[in-house]
View: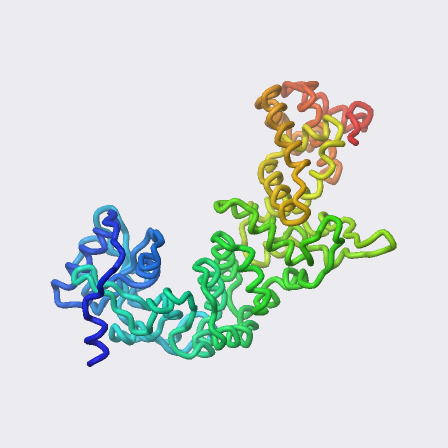
Length: 468
């Protein structure tokens, strides 16, 4: 009782709580639940970020009320996770998750509990992963409840589990990646027991759904300090069970002339940190995997270290990794495209006009150029090729406008209609047609069909400009 008395004592010097629409709706839900005799508090990420001075959009509510009791108090509810005590409540154009205090046991799939029982507030806190996530706030009494010194850990910038780390990570393997995300995003340090336990439980990542792993990895890479997160995953042996190709980057030496920064993993982390904070997922994953084939293409001779063709081999490897992590086909295609093209820019100033125009007109050109910029900053810092491409892009857009990215005037279906069997020639012919459009020699649908007819008969080679 003495401990509970300390926890319910009003806490002074709390940061100001912005009264946004979702906060007002969440407060009203707590007020209505408390008015009916139940406990109800904000919980988890919102409380953590508010106390850390970080904006957090969503508010989750924990309550002693059972799902049926929650449904009786509100007109619009959705029992999306009723078996786990979770009900969605709609109020004032906001949808909030209201979860009953619970305890959990048995994690035979290394992800979800086998048994869930309703419990107390203190028991609910005891089942959570990290102390910084086991924080509650009563918006009516304006009190923080902290059973596991989560506020102190936030101030000390320490990541600790609630209870023994070996047990927490053994219950849910996804917590291994969550530990990395919180450590990197909030600038924390893991205590020694946490670090050792993660290394011991790292193989369990291979036992859970790759959908969940891929989703959590995207969250890690979407946040700040991406390079630190990737390095931390390497130090904790977390890449091996999900993407051993990334683990293999560590210790792979590079030529000091172009890569004074060190091995391939060090370079990759620097490239990730050089990206814009709000970089698109494809750009971030492309940066992570742009040199993924260097370990398997590395050669050396009297002239130094070489990685011939690593961009082409890397594009195939990147596609395999993306598919393994269940990322979308669109994201996978973009990432493979970025990896396969990332070496082009170093030759941009020597390209023939058509090839340069084709590069700048590429649908992913801006992402490709941003990856090149980060790649340069993560190595020798030479931005001459980047600045040249910026200038040429602006010049060509001013001269050609939308003509720089012409819409296709014909497709593979047209080649099939002309009687050409589907095969590798399709790509070559359609690429040639695209070049003709870029050069302004083909402007209409009829002209495009005539070009295809001639190409299908084998005559395209003589009319299509060669590239340098």
